[in-house]
Image (cartoon, rainbow, N blue to C red; front, side, top):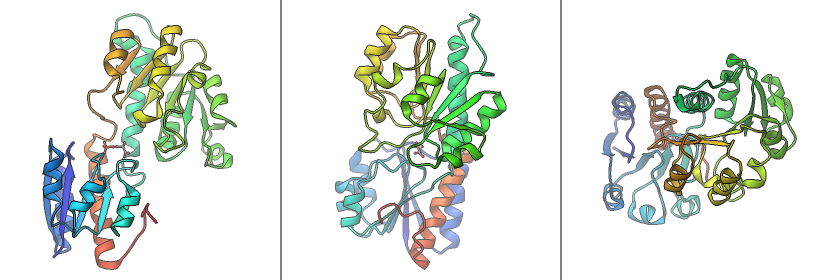
Length: 307
Ligand code: 3PG
């Protein structure tokens, strides 16, 4: 009997945990939970005797992997796996997977929640604008970006996208205008919605030179990762360009400075909320449980990210 741990500092909805438990127990395995933990020591203790681990943005580094002597697989229930040390996992012969697409509609919907909030002047009672007819730039056309495009079309927006890795034809098949560079996207669009992962190449890449290209009244929405923003440059730019707004689901390291300086132009959720819906938790959590059972029982490695 394998022991599977769900370790979530930010827990799944109870209904998702119930679904994960059903998958695990039907496969004859045991499910254990470590939810809302506050100290890394709790995680280090909980992983000691488990065969498999389901996480969200929880950090799995070398120390965690060293402590998890029985561990065979970690599934990040979600898209971005920048929270897992892939080299250390490979060195420990631990398979790492994500669950691509399972929470992407939830994240896309939150991006629109933020867009409406921005164009309605943070609900301060003054006349804002509508999204209809505005140019939306989608920065990276993965699962979230595609959902953003679909919803934007419903709003009647003019939709553009840039993705260094996605063929232009794929973007255009979705009824979206593909542009040739990130610069062209920011230059063209009233609102840019970020959907790039945090990698060595993308960290700090959203800088003043790029955001500064946005037309007057530009709005930047970040439901991706805080690390992709060059915070010092964005602060300086927003001081110079008092027309720009920044809304984020991932609180910047410099949140206090953003809050103090940009009242009415800056918003951050207190805790990352993009994937916090029952549907997204059910989809990603249950997919993670199936992927673990498929790996443990049949050696299926689909969605492995440390090949
Ligand atoms: C993801 O990468 O899937 C999203 O950022 C959601 O992250 P979360 O599970 O920590 O909310």
